[in-house]
Length: 90
Image (cartoon, rainbow, N blue to C red; front, side, top):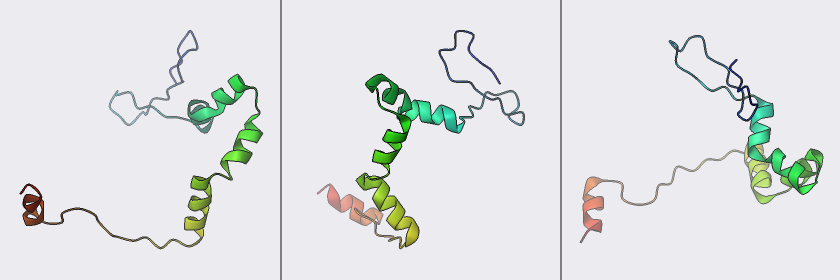
């Protein structure tokens, strides 16, 4: 794991199978910091309170409903063939 000596960047775990390339590996804790729990500290609210409100927002409710009864639709919008695409420019 490579860690910035100043502690200003997220730790990066190196993947040993990547031929020496750096492959970022974000832990759950790092993702939580990046995706909003740092803001909770700034505004003086607890992480539990943030999670309570996020669980009730519209996106989370839709996500839970879809997970319980997934019925994907395969509708596409816009041109489906080259001819339909070229007809748009007329």
